[in-house]
Image (cartoon, rainbow, N blue to C red):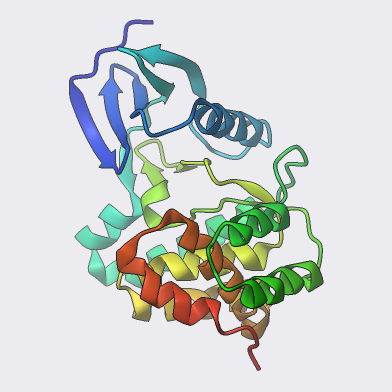
Amino acid sequence: MKIELNNVIAERGAKTLYKSGNYCVKVFDGSYSKADILNEALNHARVEETGLSVPKIEEVAKIDGRWAIVSEFINGKTLDVLAAENPERGAEYLDKFVSLQLLIQSYKCPLLNRIKDKMNRKISASGLDPTLRYELHHMIDGMPKHAKLCHGDFNPSNIIVGDDGKDYIIDWAHATQGNASADAARTYLIFCLNGRAELAEKYLDLFCKKSDTAKQYVQKWMPIVAASQLVKGKPEEKAFLLRWATVVDFE
C-alpha cells in the first residue's frame, strides 16, 4: 500500500487527516499514546463487525515515525457541511441525525468498554472536590445498566452522507457500550460547547420524542458527562462544565 501525505482534508487538534488515493489516513502526533491509537482502531474494527455503515479499516501503521490509521475514503459530505450549505433543510438533517443515533443504539457490541466504567475513571481524574466526585460516582452507580452501542462523540461532523446514497458514521475512538441517554447527554453537551444552544435544545426534544425517553432521564446524565469532559483540561470550557457538573439533581 503506497501512502502519500500531500492532500490534507481535515485537522483536528493532534490529528491530521489526509486523502491518499482511495484511502483516508488519520495521522497522530507524538502526544497520543500508542495504546489510545490501537484502542481506537480496535473499537472501529469491532463496530465494523456489527454491520453498521462505517468505513473499513485497512491498516494501522507508522508513517514517517508517526502512528496512523488507514481506512477507506468515502466520497461525500459531512452532515454539518450539508446543513451549512442548505439551511432550509435543517429540520430534515436533524431528523436524519437523530435517526442515525438511534440506529447505532439499536446494536450491541459486547467487547467494548462499558460507559459507566469510563465515566467513573474520568471523574476520578477530573480534579473536582472529593465530595462532588463521591456524589457523581454514586449517581453513575444508580443509573440503569444497559448494553447499547454508544458512539461517544456523536455530532454532525462524524456523519458522511456518501455520494453512493449511504450514510457513514466515522470516528469511533470514544465508543462504549451502555446507556443510550448518556450518549444523548454527550451530544447535547457537544452542541452547547460549540455555541449552538438552540440546536442542542431542538436535538434533545427530538431525541426524546423519537426514542420515547423522558427528558429528565437524559438530563440526569448531564452532570456526569460534563464532569468527565473536564479531564480534557480545556480552559475555555472549564466554567461551563463546572456549572453543569455541580448540578447533581434534576427535577
